[in-house]
Length: 137
Image (cartoon, rainbow, N blue to C red; front, side, top):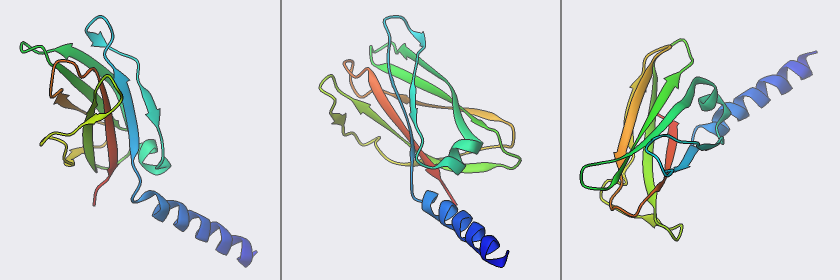
């Protein structure tokens, strides 16, 4: 019985530590009409995904013609969650467009709450983005 408890505890610790440096990714492309769009999520850190999730993704052109994306992030947990996020915009050839805005930012969501994080494309041809999230301490 002690061996089973030890194995379970070890597995849990490895799962928690294994997820600390990993990121979850949301990817979407603007559709023909502004508004909500379909998106795809790649989960690499299951514990973060349990507590933080993308609830909606909205696209729309700005007055300058570049697209803006807004992502609603929900905290399904029972305490405030801090996380870091990074928006990458992708060109029509699938290449990441490097900009000075391509830096990790930190945000927090209160228990049971939602926030909206946003980014504006660096040019008017970028219609696809990736949002990466990871846990913050």
